[in-house]
Length: 462
Ligand SMILES: *Cc1c(COP(=O)(O)O)cnc(C)c1O
Image (cartoon, rainbow, N blue to C red; front, side, top):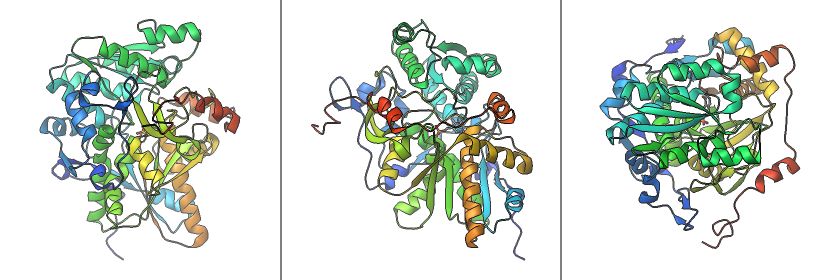
């Protein structure tokens, strides 16, 4: 028998990547630029500087450097929670009785409970380096707000977190973790911004949305001196920071001579999956492998599988630059019975472009199947997964069962982005059997599509 691959493959701190991988350097078709809605022209660096940190903008616009150094100040913070383990899912393989080999990269071993700390660390570091005193952001499920609160505490920055109101009510303890790290939590919509006041007037009693919280956080950043806005997913520089997930996975798998046949991950804004696949996709773009890439989204928020590839706003108040992406419309609101996160209306422009060019596939799954898979996984692998991560588990299980049916011995790698300890209201619904599935009709989706801006770029006039 060949050397047995261990249950957990840990890298040493020395083996941690010293540079992020920029997949754009190998993309033949770059995604189209952000458009400034006021001028209808591509955003300049100056346009972006009012909102984002300078170093992040440079990374955002970098299409040429394959590797971008991870500054020592960030690598130091990374040792708080990295390297993360790559796990061979022997127990799950056994339960499924599959000939497939299953591996997962587990990013939930930190207090934020997710991969989001990888980019929070970088963005807080760059904000501090620029001499800023505060940053703002939004958070939905709360992992991003927690991650950024941790990073802000470490680097010494003030932080305002606009937290989607329903989520701040459903997850009071998540809010308390954020506050414990010293950040302010403002349930959104709030009356602290014009965007919030306007939405409250229009929809009194609304539970809020990510798009609305983004509008508030951006407004707060541009009206506060020495303050910038930071975003937890979607943008290219966030994907860049998340490439540490894929790089570590590849180093660990290479050590054992393992190459994945399929790489699966959940897609919300697309940063974790973009980061997981980055080095492998880079090879694929150069014709060096033939890996199958599968992004998994909720059937109730199906931006890749049923969205449109057009320019849209990143927020519901229509204040951000326009991004060309797969979108359900910036006014899209996921059904309130959707419990599992991944509720953003748009998708990372990089992931959108790769999908559009046929380099990756996407599937959507209903939440009852997602929770079936989550529970199956928890019982044998021990980790209670975040519902978001369970989308990837569900697709990986499907793939492994397909291997069993076809007698194929594929190597499956999936991203286990986080833990579900703050998602117990959703698990309660599942256990009480009150969880229902919701698949929007075409007519439902049309309402969202109606909120996509009618503008020169979308009419093909630019
Ligand atoms: C935020 C989050 C996601 C979604 O990540 P994207 O990078 O936006 O696709 C998935 N899983 C967990 C646990 C998260 O916190």
